[in-house]
Length: 194
Image (cartoon, rainbow, N blue to C red):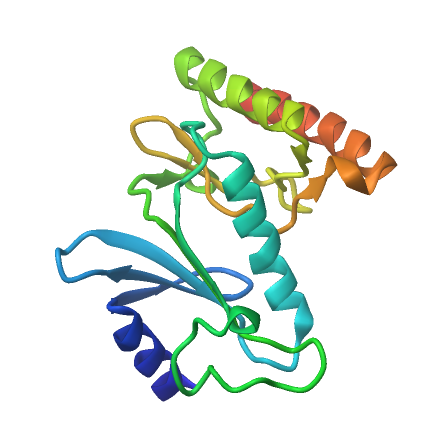
């Protein structure tokens, strides 16, 4: 698959710089002008969960357009639209399809490597943007791991939500309200860490 990843990145005009952590294939890449981006794609075509995760990330990124905490979606390519180059341009059977998401790269410190967020200005900025995302119908940012370690937040010039692939949308009903409450509890926990 690595050779195919290189072919895909080159055909899209990106050069891989490093592999990043993530549930999908996540790479820091740069374009010909040396601008850095994050490129996300499924691990394989047989597992629909990866494509679903990337679809949610792209949709939530679009809904969050204009908010400072949401890295900008640069491009979203879906095999179903016929806009991916060979070897991904051929139609696969069933729901299996290749999707690629390219987002703005955020340089900063992963909050899991720090003692939470102590700066009240950063706290207010993140809280405000998360509440705005809730009002736009997006929740469930997975801000804490199951071990209570903060995740999915990078602190650069401000806080950023870096992975929106596990979010839920307001149209999904009761789970949305549960995730709104969970997001706010998790933020309170992160802000209270010392």
